View 1: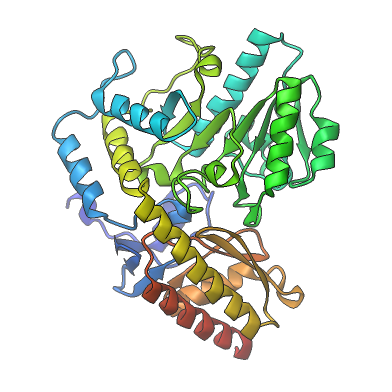
View 2: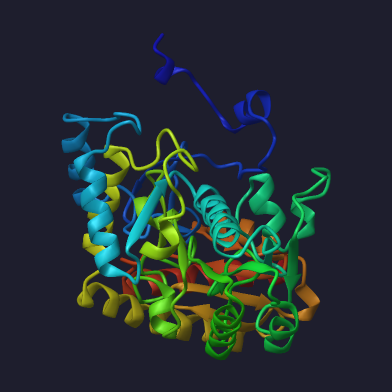
Length: 407
């Protein structure tokens, strides 16, 4: 029997996988656009996009074609050589953003790891080793490596992994006074998500990001925007910083950059990026021809005025739909927050802590939803979502909440 014909089920996960996740009982096996089918053939409307990854939906024809073509040409060469797809991607992404230089890797954690190493290296080179402290926000999420999880502001993810890397501090998100009081001359970097994703779908205020920019300019610290979740069109701009009008020194991008093919980028300027000289950092698979080809097609597809305008239009429709849900189910739902097509509904006080329960009930109705902590339902559909699909999600949400209240 061929390995791909072996019968596997959700139980197989419990038997052979390290239990770092607690996945749903249903196993998705096929997707098209925002539609997904499980092993039993049941149909779902996917409003998760693989946690804001499949921004162009499942099995997008242009991405299939690009990946298939490249698969016949060149897969991997190692970083003793460069390759044409990664150079084309680097040209395109720097032309589309503030950046002059790009470093490609495989995941958001790796992109942030590179950003934090860059910040330390740059500060040591320009100012000396005393300038090494990294400031991030409480409830932030920046990855799962020991360094990035320590910079992240959620202690539950670092418990049991001590001792943690030193010289890291956390300040409240959107608190300008705390930022000004904390960002001193010993700080090498300030990292912030323009929209906190895992922390509860909370957008930064423009004044807050501008205050961070001012503090970094004053102290010589680098301002890092973690756009792993909110980037690549998710907010209705190619990157969220463009909507805020506040430009970072370093930006990290992953998730949607490959629409599910693992690829990530750290973007920065000539002056900063030049400190990462040969042998100071690297990765075996980062920027390989397959990943770079897919990412370039994603970038070309999303970064058009028409596409981004439709994202903003769809965001308005989805926001209105969610606000109407809150109006009609006030006993369960409190308020809507977020940006673009990254939106959250905060649960009402009586239902705090039950977001996972509600998302599981929605899945039973055929709607795949995310949570952002125990108190927030997170909606992150593919950016190609139609008004009809938003209405379908509306009906499924109402059926879910009706059943939840009567059950």
